[in-house]
Length: 112
Image 1: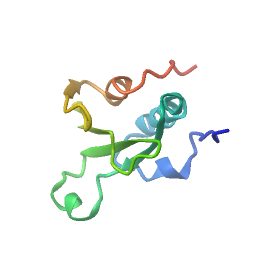
Image 2 (image 1 turned 120 degrees about the vertical axis):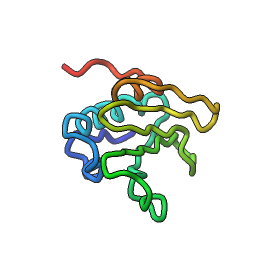
Image 3 (image 1 turned 30 degrees about the vertical axis):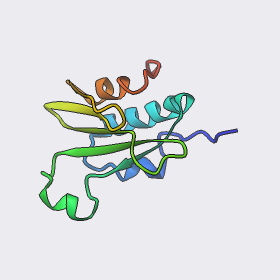
């Protein structure tokens, strides 16, 4: 049985380039995305040499499926727009916000 992660998950606290509302939404989304085989999200914004050229307000989220070493999706954005790129299908979709980009990967139920 998979363990549930909650909004206070320390994994999500590293997403410091996201707003607090976006971090809470990401935690909510991840909890529900596990149903479709999503197993992890990682903040790639500060990874090694990649981080040197990234603007301070840009977030890069790697979305990982269970058993996969490489990200299946990259979600990249800032306040004025987001992009969801499928690493397996080679598609890119532009959306207005983080919830919209994550919905392209897995549609989580609305938060109550």
